[in-house]
Image 1 (cartoon, one colour):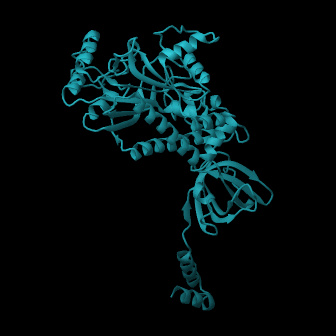
Image 2 (cartoon, one colour; image 1 turned 120 degrees about the vertical axis):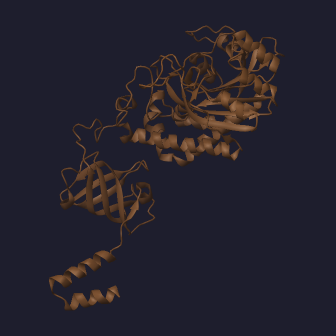
Image 3 (spheres, one colour; image 1 turned 60 degrees about the vertical axis):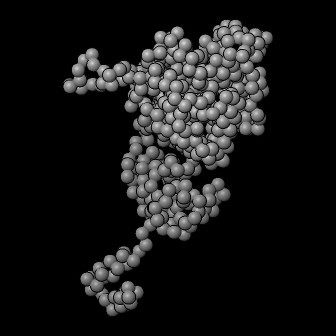
Length: 484
């Protein structure tokens, strides 16, 4: 019907009214552009189609007859090349500006790019002054420089790659636990427990005109959580495999490249186990499964780090993936340290807490591959770690996973399930009343169990080779930093 009307009007009608009707019909019949992400456009699935792409300009190259743009929307490391006539050039079309581009998606004649968008319309949605913008179009900025601009660094290639990798690694970890029948538990962020016993806590207090001084909102002092472990232990009394993945907080007054006040932890708890090997198997399998997923799904983003940010680190990652992680005891570790010619800042006597310098040396000694260290001195571990009563020295059934470039990545232990031993240790520490509920877990249907925690940011440092932990989290929180 529309074809017949159009034909009749185009042949017989010359009045302005009829011409207006004809243009309206043609506009009505014109197909609406298909909205695509840049990654979808680059796949070439809609070649020849009229498409719309929205994103930010990464480069502008004007020529006499044409203008070439690179546009990205965060869905891919590679931008989409846009080509248009010089008549669509606009002074506000600059590096960093936000645009909406409509045109035909075509196969590109250049080998370095599969497709290009031949634009017939470009709208500048948000202007950007390239002179004031801290990132320059032809400069490769280092991580230390872009760290100065936490509100803008997601615009850079390096940090946008990091965020895609972080997202994919999160998916990979959740997938691993789902495939292995773990139940995800949302543990609380506000708690009255100091799981680690180090006292590095952020206290939570309400504010407002109706708040009564010297009264606790929750009846007891409360803090931001340092670990979800104790709450996972509660749930492990009814579920044999549980995990949590969320933010944790440490009020450690440090601005070093290793510390954050807010970071993410992956924590798991397994019931009906009396073996450290059950924990090390899950740690190693999760590490390899997540890394394999990231390497397969973030090829270009990982390559950016391994080629330009941390050249040569890919060999280390490949070696980690191919090797079985060796296991040594704490006593063997101290012996290795004492026999080395390395000059350590901190002492290496039996009973000392292993420092980062010790951990990194042990990793190198074991072939620069991840290594498990087990059976730490009992007094070094928190109250919940199981007593190895059959050992000559008094040790705990605890384990750390040390990895190249980072040191400790995971820490875990079998939990003390014997009521008499746990009660005696809590009484010795003056904590029996505070943790009476924890003792109840041992009174009613208790089973041998254990678990571990993995620092997610340290994991990203490990697989990417990034030196500063502040470069692997979107918004780093640390002492004396300015928050957004």
